[in-house]
Amino acid sequence: MTLASIIRAERKLLLPTYDRQQVLFTRGRGVYLWDSTGKRYLDFVSGIGVNALGHAHPAVQKALKQQAGKLIHTSNLFYHEYQAELAKRLTKISGLDRAFFCNSGTEAWEGALKLARAYARANNNNGHKAKWRLLALENSFHGRTFGSLATTGQEKYRHPFAPLVPGVNFVAFNDVSDLKRQFDGSVCALCLETIQGEGGINAVSPEFLRTARELTQKSGALLILDEIQCGLGRTGKYFAYQHYGITPDIVTVAKPLAAGLPLGALLTTDRVASGMHPGMHGTTFGGGPLACTVAIEFLRVLDGLLIPVAELGWYFLTLLRSLQSKHSCVKEVRGIGLMLALDLNSADVAKAAVTQLLRKGILINRTHETVLRFLPPYIIEKRHVDEVIEALDSALSAHANNSHRKQRGSKTRRH
Ligand SMILES: Cc1ncc(COP(=O)(O)O)c(C=O)c1O
Image 1 (tube, rainbow, N blue to C red):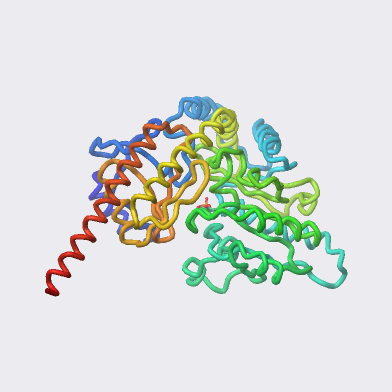
Image 2: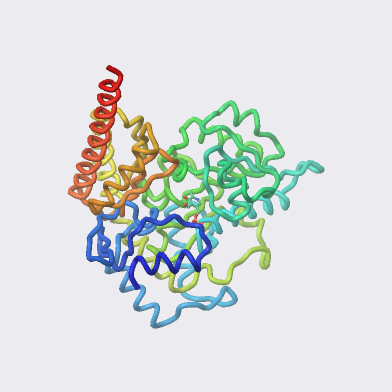
């Protein structure tokens, strides 16, 4: 099938949920993808932070091939060899005690919210007063299912599906006094992304996170961190909260966990896990042998990539800052490790930059209208960063030339 015939077929046959770029990818290797015409693309999107080891990584291929020939699915009615092994590795790197495996980010987040409510109900020691409110942050994104939407602080995602799950209030991002004002004994959990991803790469401030930890600890509420996008090495540490010196009660992970296979997890403490009993929560596919084997392999490779991610992140950040000093359309540079962003002063310029880079064979992504988001695989090298910076420089220069030309044109017309 050609790209044109696939577009025609999808238009007719699929739910119209995506506005895809008109590219048909047929294979990938390392940091590159190839389309159906044979054109090569440098991948600085990595499937929205999923392909952290790039494409066709030998360790992933080997694990997949071996396990696919042995056992793909058992259901959670029985044991297999790999959930406990994967949980052992995840608990060791997170400082938490237990794991629950599922299939996606939103499912991990749903599990975390349900666990928070169940734990609060089981430990309701203030007598008659119910502890069931959830506090989430404005501008957040936690996924597309109802609980996740209910805690997502962006009207555009919530509005079409209202009414959502009740009991959620939103705190202004990084506003410590608003947090203190809204927090009380009825809150069962405070829920946030350590670094907001879809919302435009905004890190929670150390003061806000410290206050969040103190308030929750004092009242017996849970601190739940969503590290579905920023966790598992993306920032140069296993978890982004490790930059802050705190540990949450629950953390959710997904995207890169099984290097491209669908797998999510929530990690929590023994104490909080006591809120769940057999039959209260579950999944048919989650934590199957195939995805778990690949995830074990991903974590093994990740150990050797944390320092390179941190170093390349600094290199990339420094060069992005130099673009900021050169181009007035760059409002801000944000992020850490290989989760970086250029916030521009116009959605049109951001859109044009994505298109121009795509034409040159470089994939980047635009989020929150004006933000160019960079989520490259952890295996990139300096030369790949240089290539992206050069392409961005020329895209932003082209924009500056265009707007000068337009200004001159309108002045000449006025005279
Ligand atoms: C921070 C965060 N949480 C949750 C999700 C939802 O994950 P999924 O699309 O796997 O359901 C995403 C997806 O982009 C995310 O970035």
